Image (cartoon, rainbow, N blue to C red):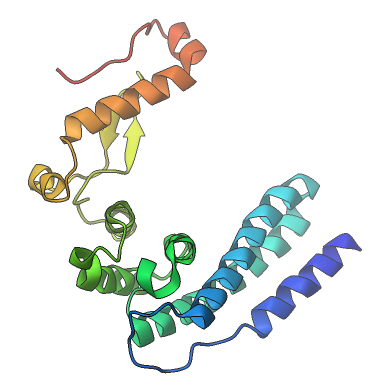
Length: 219
């Protein structure tokens, strides 16, 4: 019964979500757009919680929730494209920092729609120098898009760990150091060393069983 009620509520959100009206770009705070983004973000968060909650109830229930989440993501992807086409990327001045941060989370969940993620990145680049966009969000989306589309990461923020717990960047670009410097980031090796230390501290017992008593850092 609880599952049926939850599905009904989620489907209602999915079917009756609002769409942005076509308006000219403005730097004034757009409260209606902010509310729309917040509504989408709340439903997005609920979908994530649903998957975690129903994962323990068996495959059939989890499959239903995952299918519903896929429908919500597709609905949101279409709304995100409309927002980007209408307003550009909704940064801090247009919707406020909280809603801008929530929109970034929604952008991260367009992984099944890389063309929309690419559009979001392009719109970000238009306003990046105007301090409307958080640089770390732009960097994160650029690397996420690169990994999704199997092209070199421009900044190397997405990493993996070898069997000894040492981090490495997935498919780093040849000009990665200049890219990072341009965005005010430190060197890739320093970043990787921090990730290695974090991983080491979280996996002390497992690594100790392999005879690794210190994090393996770059020289």
